[in-house]
Length: 75
Image 1: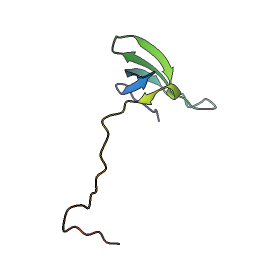
Image 2 (image 1 turned 30 degrees about the vertical axis):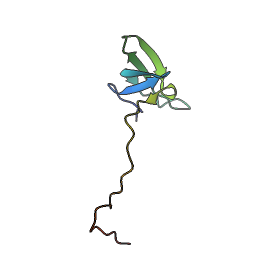
Image 3 (image 1 turned 90 degrees about the vertical axis):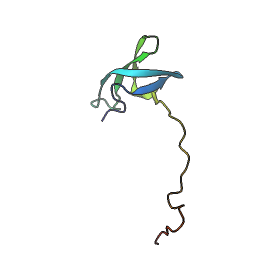
Image 4 (image 1 turned 120 degrees about the vertical axis):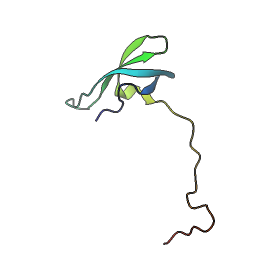
């Protein structure tokens, strides 16, 4: 299964880019997916999965799901 899909935003060299093309390459000794990404300035670049990072959204705060009064957790 590919790591990223067309339309997803990734980070390459610290810059956000959108995946515009991908090819799954599972037949290699070390499977790696191939992508073409497009930057905001419309420049495109061919990359392999090992060079990409997912775009990080805002940090999620840890939530205590059982914090409401009256809720007890069974053990």
